[in-house]
Amino acid sequence: MNNQVCRISGQSLTKSVDFGRQPLGNGFLLPQDYATEYFFPMVVGFSETSMMLQLIEQPAPEKMFHEHYAFYSSTSSYMAKHFAEFAQSVMGSGYLARIDPFVVELGCNDGIMLKNFFQAGIRHLGIEPSRNVAAVANTHGVRTLSEFFDEAVARNVVSQDGQADAFLAANVMCHIPDIQSVVKGIQALLKPTGVAVFEDPYLGDIIEKTSYDQIYDEHVFLFSAHSIKYLFGLHGMELIDVQAQKTHGGSMRYVLAHAGAYPVKKSVTELLAKEQALGLHLLSTFDKFRKNVERSRTDLLALLRGLKAQGKRIAGYGATSKSTTILNYCGIGPDLIDYICDTTPIKQGKFTPGMHIPVVPYETFTANPPDYAFLFAWNHAEEIMAKEKDFMAAGGKWIVHVPEVKVF
Ligand code: SAH
Ligand code: TMP
Image (cartoon, rainbow, N blue to C red):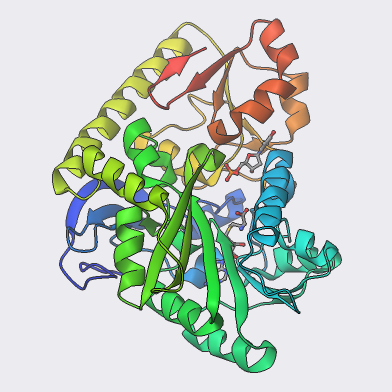
């Protein structure tokens, strides 16, 4: 969909960064499919009215989310723990009715969060259009509906199951271009006392760390408290709490309720003030961001080419969807990076979108370690460092590009 105008305010968008021609972030493929590989022009724009940074053009949802979706949430044990804690915090929040509470999760993937509600005997529904991952959720006892959530789906859920006490989502609200329909759906779905609790990569972290790899086809929006408050305010809902999260390199959890249902916590006013200081509401901030992104690309290419000239072997660690943006924006191919290892079976044996670097099983990394490993899964650094003591003990070094390009 090509939108020169803001999906929230209808006002025109001002271009920030042009990432050039990009493939699908999760579009790992085989050589016989190179000829028909899909690309789109990836440009982010900003609206000063809605204060929302967004992709000007995004591939159709059905191209990205389907029965061969390559991202399985439970590949990270750290994330499994994170979502168990998320579920516990909702169960202990006092927002759920004492009798027969009902919880809906958007984009429940393989059931990483909802299985905790299933195990606690809480009535739940996961809405998950990618059938392969939803099928895994089912094996964990999670009830799913394979649909793209919108206002119509929300109304159907209400007529079948009644209104919900809590609407949950993680790393999916920012994926949905028709976000107005989603918010209308949430409004219809929630009981008068119900809450929506969702988290996504946080714009403040992206700006502070120049983590531009959070921008890829699936992430049509990069949220801040300012933009979320504006968006939900259009539909009679209010931001009542925010909680910063370490996940995905810096995320924000937003809690929303029907306007006036609950007092607004101090955390909201504090975050709004912090965002004002950072300039997340200003166009000029995104001009500075563009310059930082360009500098990051120059530094990264200089480092990789320099190492290669010294005869060093470089591999990638984690064939993340984020890495697709870095590789294609910087033009990094198999000439610079020999392979990328990943623990996800569906990615192994395939090649990275656009730049066609081989994706290999994790065992290749341990059997044939490189001199330098580019940590594409930098958001899982803690978990990976704990696992890779041998690589480092043998003199292996890491490359990261956030908050600046460096070797450690
Ligand atoms: N919540 C999980 C999965 C995030 S990936 C986690 O944080 O790990 C995003 C998921 O949202 C995918 O599984 C995708 O299929 C799903 N999704 C995308 N668009 C959706 C929509 N309109 N409604 C519901 N789910 C959607
Ligand atoms: P994500 O950044 O979108 O969560 O994707 C992480 C990718 O990295 C996913 O494909 C799984 C892979 N991965 C590994 O290969 N090894 C690991 O130890 C971890 C945590 C992730």
